[in-house]
Amino acid sequence: MAAALQTNTRLNPINLVPGRSLANPSRAPCRVRCAAASPGKKRFNIALLPGDGIGPEVISVAKNVLQQAGSLEGLEFNFQEMPVGGAALDLVGVPLPEESFTAAKQSDAILLGAIGGYKWDNNEKHLRPEMALFYLRRDLKVFANLRPATVLPQLVDASTLKREVAEGVDMMIVRELTGGIYFGEPRGIKTNENGEEVGFNTEFYAAHEIDRIARVAFETARKRRGKLCSVDKANVLDASILWRRRVTALASEYPDVELTHMYVDNAAMQLIRDPKQFDTIVTNNIFGDILSDEASMITGSIGMLPSASLGVSGPGLFEPIHGSAPDIAGQDKANPLATILSAAMLLKYGLGEEKAAKRIEDAVLDTLNKGFRTGDIYSPGNKLVGCKEMGEEVLKSVDSKVTATV
Ligand SMILES: NC(=O)c1ccc[n+]([C@@H]2O[C@H](COP(=O)([O-])OP(=O)(O)OC[C@H]3O[C@@H](n4cnc5c(N)ncnc54)[C@H](O)[C@@H]3O)[C@@H](O)[C@H]2O)c1
Image (tube, rainbow, N blue to C red):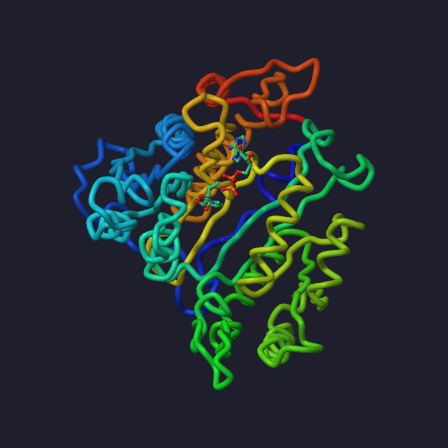
C-alpha cells in the first residue's frame, strides 16, 4: 500500500466554510504580475520567502522539485523571492518589509523556509525575526494550520518511541492559528497595586472562530479515517467550555465523523502512550503549538514534517515546521524533505493540483526507499547525503514517474 502520507490527508479546499472556499479556488490562477502561460499550461505566482539559517538551502531545493513536478503536470510557476525575518532586518531594518508582505499577499501560494538565528536573539521584541511569521499569519488571516504527523515505514526506527508504538502512526493536527491566548487582549506586563510586576495574557475565542476551525477539522477527518478528537481544557477554562459546546453542536452536520473530546493534559500523555488512537485532532492555538511539536517527534525528525496554513480566501502559507537550525546552517546538512513536502501541500491544498502533489510525495518515498538519508534520519546501512544531493535524488525520482510502494 502506498504510504498514508500520500493521499489520505487530502482535503478538498472547496466549501470548507459553507458558501466560501478555503483556498479560494474560484480565483483564476495568476491574477498579478504574471506573464501569459504557454499554450495548454496553467501558470501560478509563488512567493518564496527563504528567511534565515537553513531556510535558503531548503527552499532552493524545494523550488526545483516544485518546478519539475509542476511542469510534468502542465503547470508553470512565476517565482518571486522576497526577504523576511533576519534577512530582512539586515537589509531594511524590519522583519517583514511591506514589499515582502505585498508579494506574499498577491501570490497564489507562499512557500516559506525558516526564520530566526542567534544574531538577532537580543533584538527588542518588535525587531525579532520571528515577528515576521506572526505578522504574516495574522495579516494573511490563515486561521487553520494543518500539520500531518506520519511515521513512514522507512523511518520507524528514527522515532524515539518503541517500534510497536510508533509504527503506523498517521495523524493530522488541525491547530487554530490566529486566535486564543497568543493574540487575546488584554496582555502585557505591568506593576500592580503592591508594586509587584505581573505578566498577563488572555485566552479569547469568539464562536465564529471556533466554528470555522471545527469545520476545517470535520472536513479533514471526513477525508481521512472519519475520527476527530477535539482537545481542550473544558474542566478549567471558560474559553474551552465554549469551544467544546460549539464543536459538539457542529457534529450533527457531520454524522460520518466520530467526534470525541479530550483534556489537553490527557492528550499530551496519550500521544506518547498510544499515538495510533488518533486520526484527526483539532485544538486551539497554544495547545496545538505544543501538541504538534510533541507529535512531530514521534515521527523521528523535525526535518520531515511539512505544514499548511490556510484562510477563508487569499494565498495559503506553506512551510516546514522546523526552525532555521543555525547550528547546521550553511553546511549542506539540512534535511530538505519537510520543505519539499510543504511544496506538495502547497500544490494540494493551495492550488488544488493533486496530481503534481502526488508526484512529489511519491518521489520522496522513492528516494527514502533507495536508502538516501540526511544526517538527522540516518541509520547504518543507508547512504548519507547532504541537502543538495537529497534534492537531486528527489528530482530524479520525480522525473522517473515512480509509484512508490512501501
Ligand atoms: N517557523 C519558523 O521559522 C521557526 C520555528 C521554530 C523556531 N524558529 C527559530 O529558529 C531558530 C532555531 O530554533 P531551534 O533551534 O529551537 O529550532 P530548530 O527547529 O531550528 O532546530 C532544532 C534542532 O533540529 C535540527 N533541525 C531543524 N531542522 C532541521 C532539518 N531540516 N534538518 C536537519 N536538522 C534539523 C537543528 O539542527 C536543531 O538541532 C530560533 O531563532 C527560533 O526562533 C523558527
